[in-house]
Amino acid sequence: MKQQNLAATKAATGDATRDATLDDTWAATEAATDAATCAATWDATRVATRTATWAATDAATKAALRRPQR
Image 1 (tube, rainbow, N blue to C red):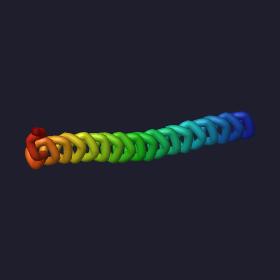
Image 2: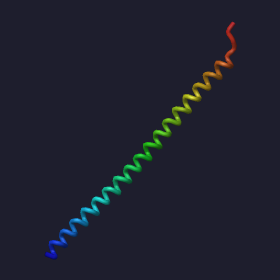
Image 3: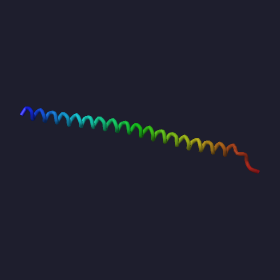
Image 4: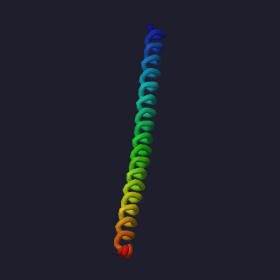
């Protein structure tokens, strides 16, 4: 009986440890993925916004400085 209880305890402990490890691994992976996704999205948005702003400013400046045609 003690042997069966010991085996059951070992099995339950192993399952719990495996589940906790998987949960921790999943949480860490999810956090890293979220951080990378946010960083990439932020960078892409920042670059696109800056590029569009520069293009609009450049076009407006060129239009303002253009000499009238005769």
